[in-house]
Image 1 (cartoon, helix red, strand yellow):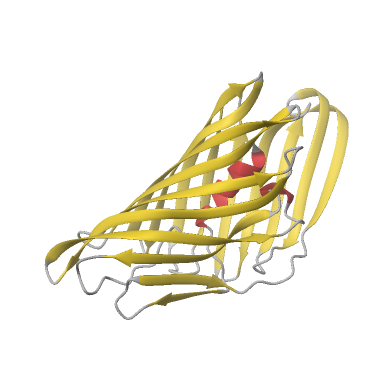
Image 2 (cartoon, rainbow, N blue to C red):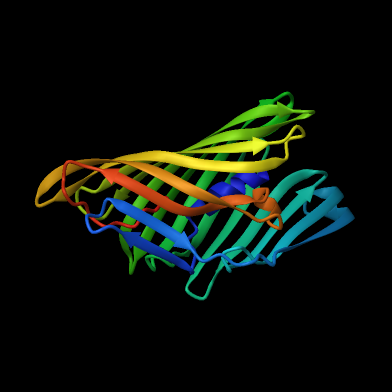
Length: 277
């Protein structure tokens, strides 16, 4: 559950070492990253005694170092008697940062996110909630909703609502996610520009449920104004994946380079950075 929550949180975190390219007509968009060797290291501390949640077993799991995009990363998960209680993380470099806190409760978890996006220089603020459902007596994330805004000097560039659902399958004695569907509705400050995307992630697992592969693709559609006329567009999205066995909170797999091909009756489209990237 924690791994997939964290993957959703970081879906909007931009990298300092990324390049954005548009075709001359604005219909082909690529966002690529400069990858490096991860230096993440995980430390686990265990204590039995009294603490914030009473008497019991307290375990703290911390992963820190540089991730495979060269970003400074520190992720800390606090558990009590085997149950997640809180996750705190910081991710970024000098020109961008993302900070987040996730609090875990009996039927849900809540999250807050703040930061700065390197691609646009915008300030990021977001709140979210994940609702659990019970499968074979165990709690799993049923869906996650995130509301996010991007602002510069107090002016809103874009607002988005992202809704993610998860599908699970039994492996040995536990259930693990095998698919997620992430629907993002974005309203931009540009008059007439609205966009909806649906991105599917497929998680390949071995017989015991360990993640061995990830495939990500989706579709988009929206409207924008070209030469004072409202035009429609549709798109196909493909996202590569990267493997980093040192990143335990994402089960080793994360989203990588982004490509979107748009189709429209208009010969040209606006060159707008895709927040989904």
